[in-house]
Length: 309
Image 1 (cartoon, rainbow, N blue to C red):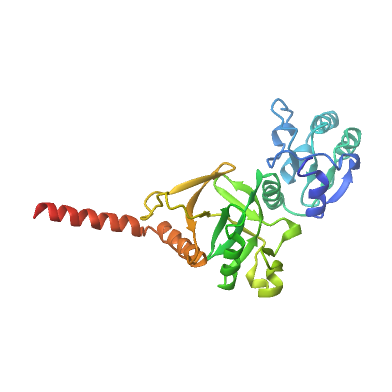
Image 2 (cartoon, helix red, strand yellow):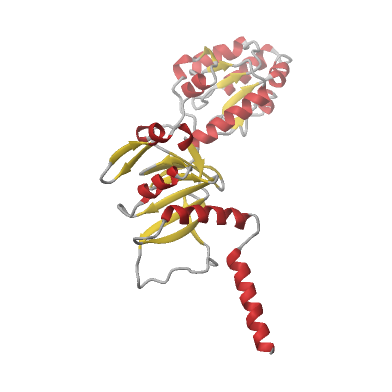
């Protein structure tokens, strides 16, 4: 099922439908937008017909210089069976040749009063968000000191309880149980909650609670960029855990690698405080302050000084 159809942009940007209503459910497969200036001049060899076509002041002023025969020919070639829409900007008058061709091929012709560049920018952002690669992860997403922390781990390890403690400490819940993730840029992952379970937390033995109702609107947010992953796992006495923090583990989600910390869980460990400190430490590292690295360098200096004595 297509993620975006022409009807979606018609509704989103409150556009005026001029002609080609039959094609209103055409799928939009790319966020790229075309301004067919060179096509107006007659060059259609590399015409990207699958893109939304934008006709602004430049394209239409050139179009009016053409002969009647050229006008009809260009508009016929512009309207293909895969073109999702042709949008006229600035509230300009739609050429009659375009109306005829669009009705024949059922290509929706829409109009906006916005300037071409501004509308193009807003439309691109909307399409990139809608057409971005997506996945779903079993976990909890919390905004901790501005850092999007995705808490993962086996069922029953204490993810939701840790999130509840973080919310009580003033941080914000984004999603519990299922986190929908979309890749908005090459290295940007944004997580949000499915609409059905938005603002809800499931605590074993207590049931489902509404975080916004209990703690207020400041305790939740609709989406957040994921910056680090915290993997909670049951303490294994035979396993060697990182005690310095020099080795940075990574986890790949879609096409983006995210910093991952593995935190062993056992009675008495305050996971919420550990995650708070992990978030603050991550921010420090981004600012160039690495406590583990500094300790290692100081240790090396002490050892070298001892060797020289």
